[in-house]
Amino acid sequence: MTVPAEHSDRRTALVTAKFSEYPSAHLELTGASWPWRSTLLAAAAVVVSVGVGLAPTAIRHTVRRRRPTA
Image (cartoon, rainbow, N blue to C red; front, side, top):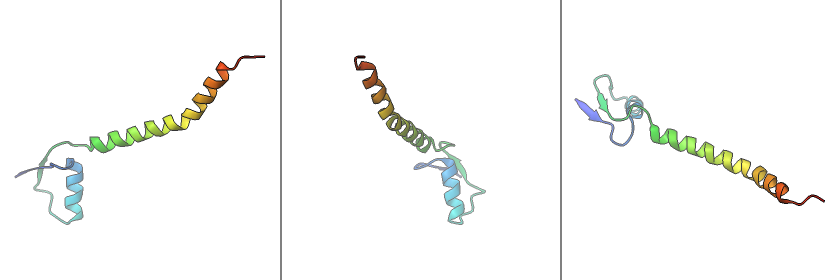
């Protein structure tokens, strides 16, 4: 029997089956093999965090470059 992992990936479906003590040896799951959505959201969060962290430095650098030297 092939069961689609419709709302998540195969790995999450297997972990959920084991957690709920459902025998998962006979399951043939279809769908994504890796949680790409979660991975991409985590990567985007890291990129945004680094950008926000570097923003004050970039602003300070830009302001110092624009000041006329006396």
